Image (cartoon, rainbow, N blue to C red; front, top):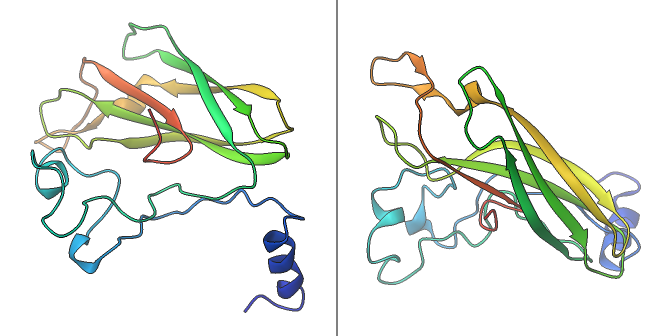
Length: 181
C-alpha cells in the first residue's frame, strides 16, 4: 500500500532520480532447506562445517543481513582500534574511512561487527555492535567513529551471569554482514 505518491517514489528510484540507502533487517535464504539462515550463527553445525556448502546449494543466503542497493559504490579502509588493550571499565574507539567511489551522492549504513575468538561458551561468528548512516558526495571520504564500551563485549555465561571475559576480539566494519571485514 504505497499511497498516493508511491508510484512516483518507485519511479524516482527506478529512473535514478533518488538514490536508495536502506538495508535489509533480516537475511533471505535462497532455498527453504537453508532455514534458519542468519549472520550471527555459532561456529558449529551446517553453517561452519568443514566442507562449506550443502550438496545441492550454498549455506549463504541470497541476500544477507544489512544488504542494500545504491547507484553509487563505497570503499572502506584504514580500520583503527584504540586502545588495543583495555580494562573492563574502559571504552574502545573504532574508526574507519568510508569513501564514495562512485559518480553520484549517496547514503551508506556503516556496520560494526565483533567476534569473540575464544570464550568460555560458544560465541556467534559475528555480532552487530553498532551502525551509522552517513551521506557522501562523489569522491568524498569520511572517517566514521564508533565508541564501544567494553561491557558490550560481554555475554551471559553458563550460570546466566553477565560477564566480560578477557580475550582477543575480531573487529569488522563494512556495508553488510557479508562484507564486514
